[in-house]
Length: 176
Image (cartoon, rainbow, N blue to C red; front, side, top):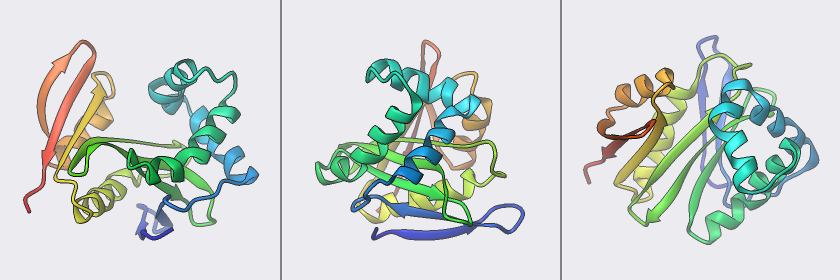
């Protein structure tokens, strides 16, 4: 994995962000990542819809699919995914951007609630990384009842663009 960044959560525990362009999944990561997907909020906002959309019967098969396709999606220039690991190296979340083209895309992120807060700092690093590889425009669609994410996007300087149904769309344009 080429990009690697470390941050500290509010208790001083080290969290790692690792790019997944050469990631190879393993059984332990698949099992632990399925626990992230089972987290109540992650399941509600992400996993349940993904299971239905991609016709997965179990969170374990969805977890394997996500991890197995991370390097493939990178090579196909469709996504840039960053795996988030805790201080002992266990997967605890993911940040990604689905590319519209080489300079824009839609950011998405999720983490287990079992780990203390760190996503704001992780997103700061991820956005800086995405900017460094030429992504100048980032959008985000967030469910209107996901108040934590809405607040975090505003703290990250995203600007509310529009509301469509239950989704609130935000945009961030980085200057060159």
